Amino acid sequence: MSRSDGEEIFLTQNTFSQETNDDNLDLCNFFLEYDTTTTSETYSVACSDSSEDEVFSNPKLTQSDDELLLNVSKLKVKVINHQLQDFTSQRQITKSKICNQRNKNFLDNVMKLRAEVRVLKKQAEEISLEEEEKLWASGSLGSDNARHLLNTLVYLIGLNFALRGGQEHRDLKGGNSSQFQINEKNGSKCLIYTEAKSKADQGGIKHKKVKRKSVVAYQNTENQARCVVNLFELYASHCPPFPRKADALYLRPLKIQNGNIWYADQPIGRHSLANIVASICQEAGIGGYRTNRSLRASAATRMYDAGVDEQLICEVTGHRSNAVRNYKRTNEKQKRKINSVIQGRTDSENDDSRKFKISKSDGNLSITLNISMK
Image 1 (cartoon, rainbow, N blue to C red):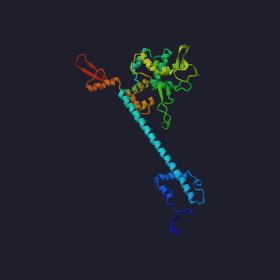
Image 2 (image 1 turned 90 degrees about the vertical axis):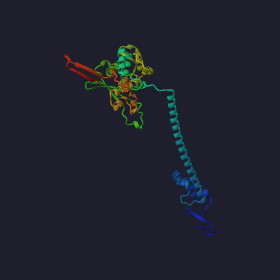
Image 3 (image 1 turned 30 degrees about the horizontal axis):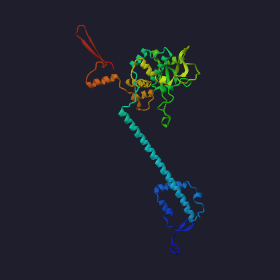
Image 4 (image 1 turned 60 degrees about the vertical axis):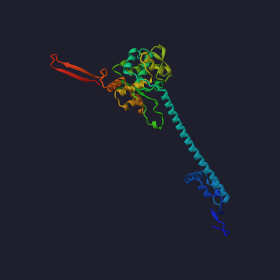
């Protein structure tokens, strides 16, 4: 559109204005300076943040050129601010990724350094059935006094319920909110343990439907003196009556017994509780690295050796991953058998088969039986 003098004009809303030669003041050219996708999205956000009264002062669309350029400059500032915010957030994400990668690299280097200098974390050794028998025979386990009864209860509870270390024993409740309950099933008593909160249950969304570990220990009718159910009842009978201040399961033994009361209304010390397994093993002359965690390792190893299904093992130990396989250890008997196979010989010391020869007195009949005891 042109005037009589030849100069071009354009129609802005309902106001005639002379076309500008400055690209910076051209509204259409302004949007072409930026990436189409980014600018359109940012412009939409900028416009959504601005009210009609803020951008267009006159709703009747009778703005002058100066007013229009002023409002365009406002939009331009908002667009630039949103672009700066997007850029800043992207930098923060990138910085976070860099930090995570640095942490991974640092951890990797620490692990390599430990491998070079052979800094290895000790694993608590399991306690074999033979060693357990030695603990009973030496008197380290028993129920003749407060100290022995407490040590025995820690040992049997840690073994039967596959508890971890000293802290999990320390957190056990035996007062008004006891985690243990004695029931009777099929004419025999059983001790039921229910965990409060485990290491594997961190309370997040992933663990929302995770069931708490619950394990049952049945009465040992063959050996009442070593029964965890009977010893638990005996221990409870020697504790202070309810109500009491201490809510912990394991209480401090009294130096001088007060009649039938053997324990104070006070939890046993953290250090004393953590060293119980190490102390009783040392008393019985059992070497190696033995801690309260050895009880958990012993329970898992015995179940693996007996061929118990791994899912059932996890129900007892509380594992929810294949980490339980760390307790699948090779015992001495298996090592000897493996070495015999490698050397191509039959080790009579570890051969479970037994040969029996039966013959008649007259020598006419001879029968040899090979009986495999596996």
